[in-house]
Image (cartoon, rainbow, N blue to C red; front, side, top):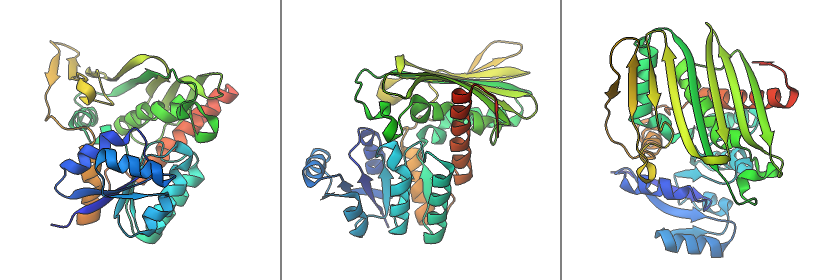
Length: 329
């Protein structure tokens, strides 16, 4: 059986979640890691038992050793190294946010089309059976007419030098975790909102550390999102319709580090019921999705059109927060 050879483009902490998914797959293998210097790459390769270590990202791409890369570098590097990877004939699974501007999204899309290689935004939770079931129920009409989607993703950053707090590196809580509620709302309600309103609290490093937003969709539907770097970990999501609502008490990292999670249906009349679904390692879906794209020619589950909508909406929310005005999309 042909196996996809994976490389890690950076030694970021999030890699520890993706490595088990690659190694558990029958269709992929982890063969390389690249860092900004050989010492760092060698140390990481030794720790995680990775066969090859490269002293630069470009060296790994030029080596011919990998078929796909997982890009977990800081946010401001995502688009550049997605394009460089695609131009080297290497498929890309890129961490969110996929890019920081629409021009960057379009440039990555053009590179993917020109080189015939798949590229996908690494929204791992979108592949999870819990998310798929919630979206299926919402779209099926079982909740009646959808009215409101609410979602939050909050956690605390204490280290003031954290890369997620650096403006020059594409930091900010909306880019880091607010994109999860944005993507959830769009998966449920479809496409981009018609207009948005955003509000933010800027910390001492110059990035948003608290953000709240409201997104207005066609047919009088509303999505409300919050995210923060200043509170203990907390996440939830709720889909409300005229005939009932769904609640997800851990929508974005179900099962990670023993996080309990459940999907509950609260009908307009009658007792709440828990909806059951298959247990699933959170990061396996995005890895297998890339294998399907490369080996079977299937389209990626999270499309580039969706990804462009995520970035477009985040940018509009930031514009609203800065200007204090409603922003139309």
